Amino acid sequence: MDYSMAEIRAFNATVQAGNFTRAGQLLGISQPAITVQIRKLEGRFRQPLFERISRGVQLTAFGERLHRVTRQYQDLDTLLSELGGPDPEPQQRVIRVATASPLVFMPLLAEFNGCYPDASLRIRVGTTEECRKLLLERDVDIGLFPLARRSAELSSLPYASHHLTAVIPAGHPLAEREQVSVVQLMDYPLIFSRRDSYTQQRIEQAFASRQLEPISHVFMDSRHDTCEAVVYGLGIGFALGDDIRPDPRYRAVPLVEMAEPIVENLVWLKSRSEFSGIRDFVNLALEKQYQQQV
Image (cartoon, rainbow, N blue to C red):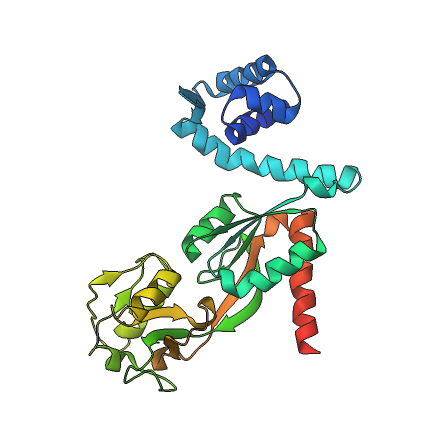
């Protein structure tokens, strides 16, 4: 099928901008020129790629399928631009990051911001699976999360490790223990997280390893809220140890059943390894690791 890069660029820009006028502004061409390119592409596939909505346009089901393929051409355009010309101006640099462990990676993010003060850091916080999905769909450049499942598409760099812990209120009979077993926790009210969260999945594995089926009547969406719920006596919660702030009102006690540390990774698409922003971020992480070892 003899489609052109101009058509693909117009299509991707329209997806990004949400309407034909802003897509034209992104590419520095007129709105009618964008419309012509989209119509050509629709003619080649013999079906619509967008449907009109009150705010602009949105992808049809086929358009979504096509975009999963064509967004790779955006990577090619970026790489060719970096190879063919001078480095982009600092104000043009935008690094999109998704993290499931903001406290673990905040020092690295702060150092990157200090090294590249004119770059724009756009940080999204979500579950491990949400961060993975954003990365695979090219909605972010760097993922910072435990890599539970390997993928041929992804490269990774182990960065830090910590343990899964029970968050126990100060003064509780189990609070001063060095470790605690899920068997002991069955006697107390428990606070669980979202079922799709990495922490909750590991907690369920810990209980299952003892053939236990715990019941919780309190569910929280965030680790911060879990800690507050613990403080107010709603039960014992769970979190990765370095993901919560130290607080005299509770203690994070490692679980016997989860002795192996959880490894936090920098993750990026292999196909985008040569992007300057990704390369700078990974190199900074490597440099910090080296400094910590010497």
